[in-house]
Each structure stands twice: as structure tokens, then as C-alpha cells.
Image (spheres, rainbow, N blue to C red):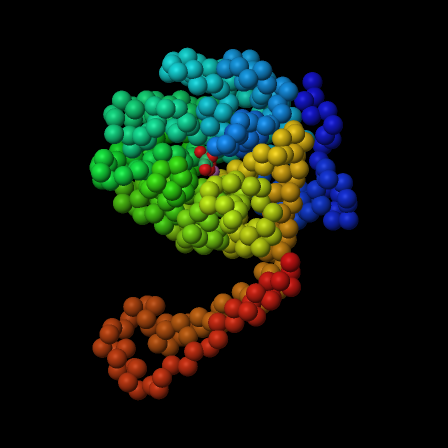
Length: 435
Ligand code: XUL
Ligand code: CO
């Protein structure tokens, strides 16, 4: 049965095409820097946005049309959604997907019943994966929607809630493992606080680290070798989120001896909410050897919240792909569209338009980044800018072969330093040569 009867399989038609249901730039088999675009970009779709986002907002209910969904919490309905989702993946030519446990299966307000429902849907997803060759990029547990997690999960003041969350993570890891998931993500949904008047921050952070260590131990126990990620995000939903940005996450992982086991899953809209650019966050993670995966989207600077829009900004995708190419590409991770349609785009076909746009925006970003690298002007400029460190006193400092006294002596023999221009405007013009 076809749930999207009006949508053909989306194929590459080239930049001259005016067909809205075609890729203009994403040509999966095209080779760039020795690898196909498909292998570079490793696109994934987010089950929560494609299948479960009704497009409600704080002022009004959902608008999304989902004619396949009877809106019940039955396992049959959940399995049917999975069928719809896999038709979507097939028509979009997207190889990977990501889910929360409660996206794919219902929360039944009873741990055993919810877990049994999850297992049943996971078996069905396994069959669909086998039929289609689609793969799970990562799984996660939803530890933020249910009222029991209103005050946190791993950081809840209530040990009973922590235990419940741990059991839910175990079940979600089992699901991820059963589906051959390449990764498992922790986004600290409500791991944060609203006021210090009622919060023991030290104790909460210790508990969160304990939860993550338990996950690492459990992975060993069941033989799950996928990559663990944590996903930074500031402010929303808590006033203060513990995992506010890449640097805060790295500090937490280092402090609690978790850095060997975790990488970061960075999201563009979270970066901008944290007051950073996405390429800043990507750079911070790469420098720590900890860039794992990306939740691809973009925010709206006119709105101060997580709007989760499909990525269309070519500067953004180009700058991110420059960093990804410098890093040598994704290993376990990929580009997961943690993106939703606007509330006004309520028709099923809008799911396709959004993903086509996001995939084309990243395809162009990849091509632009490769062209910038082949051109070499920007790379050469950066190398030249730091040339004083390659020999002489710079090389001695980098080797830590000189001390304050020796540097004082060196400086005394010299005149004032003469700075070279940073040439930002010229470099911006160079980048624009390729856009
Ligand atoms: C929330 C968010 C989550 C995580 C997974 O802003 O990005 O959907 O990606 O829990
Ligand atoms: Co996300």
C-alpha cells in the first residue's frame, strides 16, 4: 500500500530542473574528494518529526495531516506508522533514521507494558530494515515528555525517577542494539534546573555521570559497540541546561572520565541558541576528537527558540562541510534532519519538500567546501598566518623549549612586532567566489 501515492521516488535531475520533487544538487553517486556524496553526507530522517510531529505550537493544536494514523496508542497503529516512515525513507533515498523510544512505540504509563510495546514495534522495524536496507543511525530514550520527568531524569531530585529513567535507557539501548544502531544519543531534555533555591547542582551532575557510566557498562554487557553521543543545548526547556554547549559537554565528560566513551551530537539550532555559530561548535568538538554526528537544521534569528527549520542557509552548510572534510568525514555519525515543517505546511508532501531542500543545501555545502579546498587560497592564507610558529622562536615556544626569561631576552633584542592583516573581508570574498 502506498501512503504517499502522489510522490515518486526523488531522483537527481540537475540544477536546471524545475521539478519540485527532484534533487537539483544531491547526486548520491557523484564522487567528491574520492567519495560519493551519499557516503559523505550520510543523511538520516528523524522519526519524531516525520511521523510524530503534529505541528502544534503553544498557541494552537496540531495541523499536520496524517491520514494513515488512527491517533490511538495501539501497537498496530505504531507498526503502521513504521510502514509509512519506511515508504518515506525509500522515496527520499535517505539511508538512515533516528528515533526516541516513545516516537516508535506508545508510552502506556506502565513500564512493562510500554517496554513490551517497544519490543514488538522494534521487531517490525527490524523486518522493514531487512527488506529495505535502511539503517539506524542512532536511538535514544525520551526522558523529557512524560510528567514523571518534569524535574529531570538522570538529574531528578527523586531516586525513583532516576531508576525509572535508567530502566527506560536500558530498554532503548536494547532496541538500538537489536536494530544494529550505529549510535546511541543522550539529549539532556530536562537535565538542568529552574532555580538554585531548590537545586543541588553537584549532586545532580554526579547522578547524570552515574547514569552515563551505567550506560557504558550496559553496552559492554550486551556487546553494543555503537558510539555514545551527548547533544548540547542551552536554556530550552530548563532555564539552565547542564549540557549547554560543546565546551560545557566536553568539560563534563572529562571531569567524569567519560570522554573515551562519548562524542558529541551537535545541532545547528542549539549552537545558535547558545550564542555560537554551528561551525564554532563543530570546531570545538573536532579539536577534542569528539565530533560524532550532526542534527541538521537551522533556527530563526528573529525568534528566540528552537524552531528546528530545515537547513537552507548555504553559508552555514558550506562552513560545516569544510570542517567535516578537514576532519576526514563522519565515521559513525551523519546528518540527521532534526527539522520540522512550519505549522502552515501541514500536507504530507511538505515532508518531502523540506527534506529535499535540506539535502540539496548540504549537497551544495559539500561541493562548495570541496571547491574552496581545491582552490587553496583560504587554506594557504591560514597556514601563512601562523608561519611564525613554524621556525625560530615560534617553534621553540611550541616545543616548550624556552621560558619567560629566555623570551624576555629575545624580545629585548627586537623592535616592536609588526602585525599582518587578518584579511577577513578578502577571505569572505574568496568564499563568495564559490557560492
Ligand atoms: C531537542 C532535540 C532532540 C534530540 C534527541 O531539541 O534536538 O530531538 O535531538 O532527543
Ligand atoms: Co536534536
